[in-house]
Image (cartoon, helix red, strand yellow):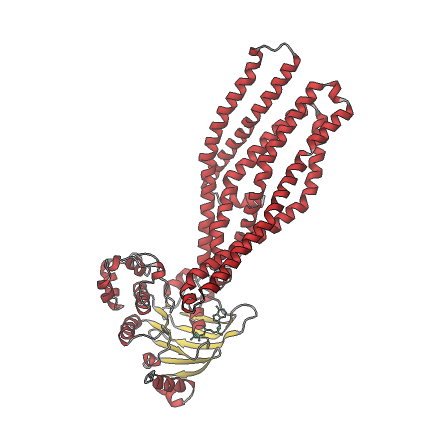
Length: 577
Ligand SMILES: Nc1ncnc2c1ncn2[C@@H]1O[C@H](COP(=O)(O)OP(=O)(O)OP(=O)(O)O)[C@@H](O)[C@H]1O
């Protein structure tokens, strides 16, 4: 029932079509009962004796008419009901993707791309099956069975009474089987997620595996999961088949019991024709149920499992907040902010406080793992702080409308994701409505002119998988171009850590300088000479800000920053031999 109400809730405007499809399926189920009913009733007529061919014609005619009705009903069921089911599945898929956009990034990391891909792909497919073919088979089969069962009752209430008792016993015996099936299917689901995860990991990490000559080990890990999935199915398929057959047996055991009952009660002698026809209808009813209901029930279990996974994801709290009354100053204030990844995780950021006034540059520096990127992630509200608050324009960003906040901030990350699309489309993500003049201006400001001129189709060149056809420096300049187009007043920038040749580095610096002008910039800097002119520098260590000031002040202090500076000055003169 939960699965059906889940499907119903996602039908939206297609509910009318869905109901029409169900009505057509009811009609189809009724029509499907007609051939068996006509044969049974024809047999009764024959048993009465003296039947002429014309006496039997109505029965034959009913079978032909039922065939026509059934075909028409099926057409309606397919065109209306199945279309509605497909629409509901698409709504579910869209809702999943939509939810991915509004849950905090931290929750998405926990769900993993493989699990999310399984929800949108495999699990949505089961919802689709259940809302279309499976549901229709179950309804049509149930109706056919019920009609034939009712006909059997007309001729021999004893046969039907015995079968109902047998059915009730079967239902009770069936319960442990349901639990085992649910367990097997849950394990199967976990394997599928693990398999997707490994496939993704293998594809993404193939370069690393190759570099470290670990292709064999990586493949072995991958094969281990495939082998695990195979073994699971090998172990459980016979069990599942046995259970399905047990179900069919339990359902059909009523017929031989009814046979014994009519023999013992003497009904077979008192009314032989009626008893025979009742048994015939009972067998036909049981066949309809077995083929439609039992065989499809497994799919319904898969659908129910998929629904549970989706509901769990939908239950992930979304970023809340509706306030939009940011003060025009848009000063950024971190007020005693603390944060840990996961419930029992080590504190990544502790009691961090600073003010970044509008139009100024704040640089965050410190050793690896000091918490610099985490501060940026909190500013962009990828996570909410565990304690303390971040305020922009006087407004706690935890209370701000997430979409409005996103409009105020551009994030230029180290890991620039490029989509398999043209360079133009990748830059236009910053502002899809930008005209060519603005686009060309940001291309120039981000120092992408030379790249565009060198690409075969300029801005309309398609970038490869994940944008791998661009170098690290070029990718970061594309990210800067996006941010320039977006033109948000606050820029959160994680400077690329990888070493670059002086020309690339100069190009990036120029691009970043264009981005900085007139904006509030909070930058994690790895090459300290790039931030010597920053309005304030925050030196972090182990999650805390340990020094703050301008470049000269911090040098004069002779602490961590001065140490980092000296180390970098020395390193800039290093050589291999
Ligand atoms: N997604 C995550 N889950 C769990 N722990 C994390 C996660 N990201 C970072 N951490 C941990 O939080 C701490 C701070 O990490 P953070 O990335 O903020 O440091 P950082 O100063 O930016 O380092 P780097 O300069 O190397 O990028 C580290 O101990 C790190 O291992």
